Length: 96
Image (cartoon, rainbow, N blue to C red; front, side, top):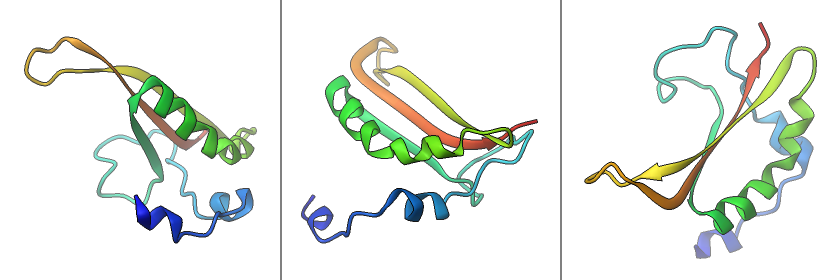
C-alpha cells in the first residue's frame, strides 16, 4: 500500500468531477462501461473506515441522481456460508 502514500488527497469536488452516473434503467455488465462504481470488501471495521472517505459522493443526492448503497456480508466461495467480511457497493444513478 505504499503507492497510496504517493497520491495527493483529492477534494470532494475533484472526486465528484470524475463520476459517471449509471443511466436510468441500466442493466448488464458494469465492467464494460464508463459507469463509476466503488466496491470495498473486508472486515466490518475496514469497510466502515474506507466508506467514510467517500462522503463527498453524497453531493450527488438530488432530484436528478441518487447514491446507491448496498452493504452485504460476503459468502465463502467453497461452502456458500456467510463470512465475517462485508462488501460495500457505492454508485451514483440517474433517477427515473
